[in-house]
Structure formats: C-alpha cells, structure tokens
Length: 191
Length: 177
Image 1 (cartoon, rainbow over the protein chains, first blue to last red):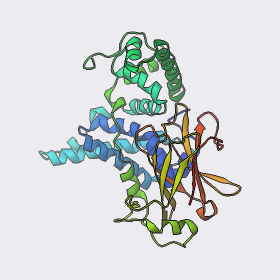
Image 2 (image 1 turned 180 degrees about the vertical axis):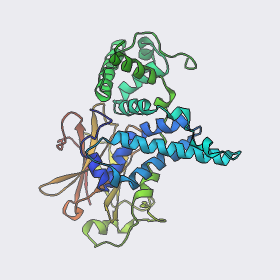
Image 3 (image 1 turned 45 degrees about the vertical axis):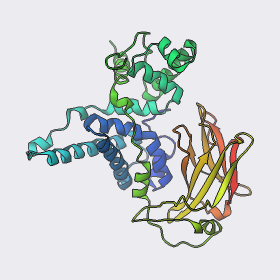
C-alpha cells in the first residue's frame, strides 16, 4: 500500500467535507507532518502549532484538492508553507527587525524534507512491532541480538519482523529498501 | 551505484534522522474543534432524543461532550472481548451524528488488524470509522452520515487489513440506543 497515494476514497471524502475523513487523514499523516515541522521549528509548542495549523488549513483549502491526485504531496506543501510562516513569524517576534530579504530565506532544513516526510508516512503505516524493530535498529543503532534482548523475543523473530518491515517500506516507497548489515547504524548519543 | 541503490541508501540514512522518529503532538481534538460546524437545532429523531442529556457546544465551532453526564447508551463486550465495555454519547451536528465512545477493557488491535464501528439496521450496516487502541487511550469518535433513527444498533468488529472492506463476523462489542 502506497502511503503517499490517493488511497481508497479518503481524498474524495475529505474534499466533500466529511469530517471523519479528517480524523483518518490525521491518523495517517500527522506523524509525517510532524517531521516537516520538526525540521524547521525548535520547540514542542511550535511543532504542535504547526501540525494543528496544517490540518486546519488543509480543511479550509479542501476545495482546491483534486481527489484524482495523491493527498500526501498536497498536504506536504501545506505543511511546509505553514512551517515557513511560523519560522518567519517567530523571527519577527525575536527581532532585530529582519529585512524582507531575510524573511525570504527559507530555513535550510526545509529545503529537502519531502523524503523524510515520505519515509515517516510509510513508517506510520507499519504494524507497531515491526516499526519498533526499525526504530531500535536505525535510530538507536541496536543490533538484532540487542533488539531481541530489549524486546524479550528470539533473534529469529527480530529478523523476520525486520524482513517484513523492509518489504512493507519498499511497497510504500516504491523502491526496495535494502536490509542493513548486523552492525549498528547510529551509536552517537544513543547508547 | 544505480539510482535504485542510491534511493535505498538515502532511505536508510533518513531512517536514522531524528525528525523521522519525532513524537507526534496530540492535537486531533483541537483540529476537529476548529473544523466542526456550530451546532444548531435539528429535527428530533430517536437518536436525538437519546442525545438530549448531552451536549455541550462551547464557543464557536466546537462540538464537545460533557463526560460528567451519564452516557446515552453503552456497549458490552461479546465472548471475543468479554472485558470490553464502552460509554457512548451522541451529538447531533449539521454535518451528521457524532458518536463519542469511551472504551475500556478492549485490547489493542493485533498487528495486521483493526477495529471498525458500524451502525446497523435490520437489513444493512454502515461503517462509521476505524480505530486500533494502540495508543493507550480509549476515546474514539465516530461520524455517522446516515439517518441513525433507521440504524439503532452500534457494533464494533475486528477486521483484518488484508480481508477487504466487508464487515467481518468478529463482533467484539455491541449495544443499542
């Protein structure tokens, strides 16, 4: 299942003003929208503000959404715009008074967030047990043996969950995500 | 290195990015409060009578439920989930009927499955939403777009992700307004 696609009838229901579609949209993409906000904003409150504004603005702009096109890129564009607006608003508040040129400069972190957004949306579509194996491996840098110990499950189960998770990610992202070697990917600050 | 390999490598690098794992703020209720239309008087129906005890529309655009009021009706667990129970409060809005459930005792849906709500008449059922209970919170909001006076029963089924959209026969909770 592609998580950046216009799956089932969610887009059509959202455009038609079905508020239950908003709940589904939120559960499917709030995590991905959070990655956009988190890439540019520095506090939890600002991130929460950005996520809320993104969905409310999307609702207000739903008449502009083409239900024959995928929802994910459309929502991403709104999330990015909201994050930029909040960055500029906060720069104005924190002064000194910025020039228009200053305000025109995008946060560097927002220049290429699409891939992060897409990966997060795919991760949020995974079963929790498979998602947790990926988090422990990629984010905490754990080996399969360590993950087995942490989750109190056999190493073989870790490997099978990892295999399924990579397969699902590949389906969602449209390209094969190669399974990593046993060595930890990231150890700095995550011992 | 092929573009395919390059994409795979970049994806694996992205998976180590803090932002990918950032906690999602819980602002759904705020979003719904901001988009839901204000309540206004509606024709009285059987379910609306059940909703008379409720309600609480505070401010502009909010549809809130007073959880100190007794529920309009309750759901009981079936033999598939004997410990499950739910209080149901009903709010009529111009866009449809909101069914707010406070669920207790229902296990999180297993991997590859989810729960689905249905309003049911004598010969038909209409889906009102899905949920999974994996976040430790049993607050669930359903929306019904059908005339619920004709669909007086609310049931919750357990569904398999790979089984298609049809209602399964695994009923875990049921109740009537």
